Image (tube, rainbow, N blue to C red; front, top):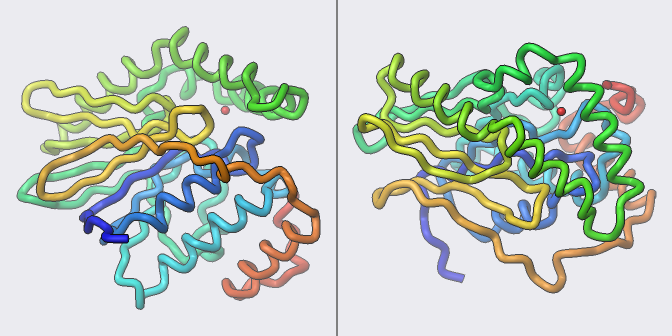
Length: 269
């Protein structure tokens, strides 16, 4: 396959540990594209309970570990989201990447900023405890849902529209970029891919990987593009044995130099 060489690829809101997480498809995107920088733009995890991670979730983390190898010449950046909070030290060691609250870089003579976006969501900031309770309930509903999780996907979309999160995050991000002299700013959090331009400043949202619409961003000499992943017939695999999941974790833990008896499972939208 003749792969296009992007400067940066941005992916967010994978929510590993959730029943609706599309980890296998996200891993394919990383394997089928060539890039010099990868930005994981927050909410890569659903919560801090590693017991919910499936075989495909561990495979995604394993591939991130491979990409972070200096021999690959790929800069891997993890920007912390509201669901990732508390995982910084663990993930830095587990997958070999640095975790940032905000990441900025220069490309094509323009300043770029990547920040998850929950900072501009007043409901999230002011109601942290309620939001965590909602996350726990949402994850439980996924287990009771029908094939394809139609109810929980509908709740996710309704939540975004009812709270008008996309509009709030876009407005806050554009002002944040303006104050810091950036020409482009990138967020996740809303699960809704979009582009807004205001006064010469571009705002992009990378969307998410828990719905039927799976999106990511790329940056190259031609500018910023929003890509939609097209689902394939073999994207779904329901046969995940517990032993396979444990093996995937053990392989990653061993490569990262972690002790297998460390209690990651109890480490705690």
